[in-house]
Length: 483
Image 1 (cartoon, rainbow, N blue to C red):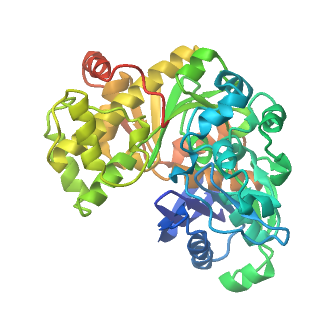
Image 2 (image 1 turned 135 degrees about the vertical axis):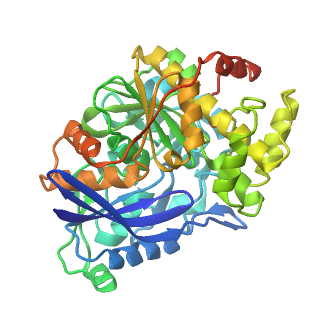
């Protein structure tokens, strides 16, 4: 067995895990976890990237000797570097309000239908394209000579080398999913300089070695290579879906819910655009065809507003609340910003003419029913739009620890849900590194190893999906994602 360090950065925390990979063994150990606390400054909401990098270094120190390092993180956000390679300010948080109204400006030059046909990207205010458009004319962008997405920026600080990993680049709304290269025509029409981006890297490509300064800081003995894993955390999570065939859907459940299918080619129809599905790139030429939903952010923000009560007890109480009493649209952009989440959920129910949840248990049940409903709707629509039937839904990520959500999702989808692994993004990260060392094979081989080594839980649907369809009808039109 060989040991690999997986740096896995989420929207609320980061961690460094050590994965040990052998021909028939796959073991994961968390060695360091650290908070990811965005900071609101006069200019807006920003990521504290220096604190995150400090957490990465602490984690690598705790990891001990490893064969390589890989980094995955959330998508779309970036740092700008000057001509000397120095960071120009803290990266802007995707929940910052600067992109409000930007889509309409973009569509005035490249109409929405043309933009989707060229990039296959969903309409979401958080995309890198919209962020860059909103930054046009700023002093910071004018002085920038390089743009690096978050995992690529941290890789640069570790190694001194620059690149743009493809799976994360595919979330920028600037990649053509057919060519798996930049959408040059779109960028030219919108005045976006693609020269700001470092050259594209494929998952599995070498990304340099730890610098002498990093080796000294972490106590590691060099050389320690860094691998460009599937650096969008969802891409790594989907790579770790323990599927045994092709007829599956997946849900990567965490702060966001990413719900969809793994395809060989993008779906670029006008109907797909109207349903707000996106085409992101995965391993081995695959396309992650999915809808992006708010996910457990709704519950996380509610729990924070209540003063962080015991989550286990809260879920037990929520299970006793009658199901589908009240539901909200888990794709509503009104839930994107932080703050006052229970009140905003209650107001959405009030406006929709539904019973208003009052207690934490009632709000929690509303959130979980709403997420399960959105999961089921997305799975159903993805099958129809891609003309691909599924027999099972694989649910991976932190949401798999929420048994009530897993069961409700099976009920809403009308097919079994196989839950696990919870550490899917870190596992996909480690497996990609192990693949580079010849310890695992292609995507099919990676998944076979997962099936043999990971604990999975199966949830069978209870009853029919009729009540869920009726609840969907109370919300009106299908959800259009986070816009």
